[in-house]
Length: 171
Ligand code: QAP
Ligand code: CO
Image (cartoon, rainbow, N blue to C red; front, top):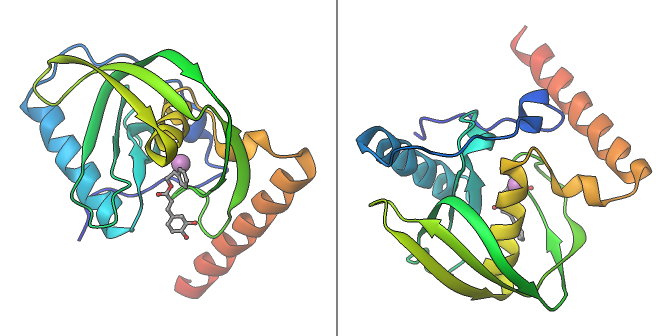
């Protein structure tokens, strides 16, 4: 059982701007392990701390088919971005909805790893898209913000209706 509950759109806590991690310690590594467990269990390819109601700048991602290529990025910063790619994106905080989003195809990113070591990485393709999507979460932004107001409202209403139906089931 994953320990962490994933916040769902339009929960206002998803709009929180996360603050930088100031110390990479065992408590943070325990959160990272719980985030990986929650992401793999979902299953998902990326998860930002914001989505599990921890408002610190860290994210986990694994876009590999065999789920054996885990990445954790603490205090990530994009140094360079180029190219354009369109991906059908989803989000664990917007369950059941997928829409095309345009992002940079390549990014160079600087971050701390789980030992607190500063690293730089060149990333392309789906991992680059996933890191950009997860970094948006750390600034309180969701992929639905790139859609038309009409589409975003339709998604919000469907999710609110589902939440109401779920609440009724347990009542
Ligand atoms: C972000 O999203 C992402 O709707 C990570 O019912 C996704 O892991 C970046 C998921 C696609 C780029 C492309 C979504 C699971 C997982 C759902 C995810 C769902 C169950 C989303
Ligand atoms: Co997301």
